[in-house]
Length: 366
Ligand SMILES: [Zn+2]
Image 1 (cartoon, rainbow, N blue to C red):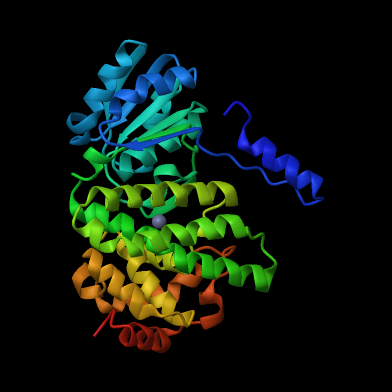
Image 2 (image 1 turned 90 degrees about the vertical axis):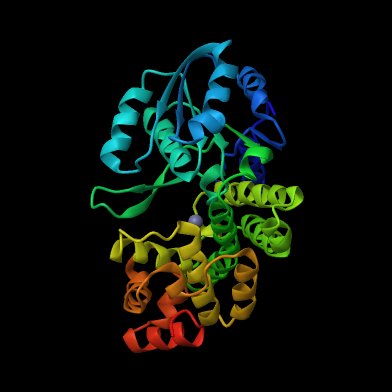
């Protein structure tokens, strides 16, 4: 623990004559039942003291935020704030306040965690992640999804959490739709890794076998645990949480979101831009994108449909309340969302007709 993994890996790479690659990972990860009380000990171990800025959401404050605040109260000065908006103007206010504190703790769902990890990054203070829902794989990743100044959701560089405390008792009581959405986000790693391998072959982009294997393993474990997760079996929820944390670790090892974000995420980002007011969740959109992109990759896309159905995730545009023509437009636009991310979309060159065919064949539209 005292010897950061990054130093070891940097040294190893140096010895083998490869280009140095810096890896930053969380230092403490605790996943278990009834473990919120461990936060004081974790802070002590990590020598976090002084003042703590504790962020939670309107409902997660009562579910876990107040408890965490009480636990920390005996060892540092705690100031709590409720955050609910990922609009950059609101997030900037949080960053302005965060600068006065020694560390930041985010207790809540995806939104709260994203705000806290971005505020930690921007204000240069350590961040502890206490997720109350497994809604996406950002819990342990160095990226945050926020609404940019144009109002559209986008992904930003953020702080790798110094510690993650994931209480299974709390997480398994999260609204099931958030749990299913988190599963779909992890399942989409399969496509992301296919895209990454393709980019490596075609553009010689950096590729890590290790990071890719972890990401695929996480996707397989979630797929294999679908029935247990749907039944809210503790082992299933624990597998999901471990898969989400592993996905985040894969991104940390890769130094980018590559192992967990490919063409299916580009499709999701395109949907965000085309229809910012829609009600679908990030993971649900990536799940739908995975079906479509699996077809383009000539992978058994029907298996992804089956697994998503087992989990109770939407697999059609209609179930997600998205009009067919938005799906088509998103498919055509996805390739140009991130110019530096080579994916199967660069090879497929979808026009409107090809996109419509793809969406029809895979049953995403009628
Ligand atoms: Zn995602």
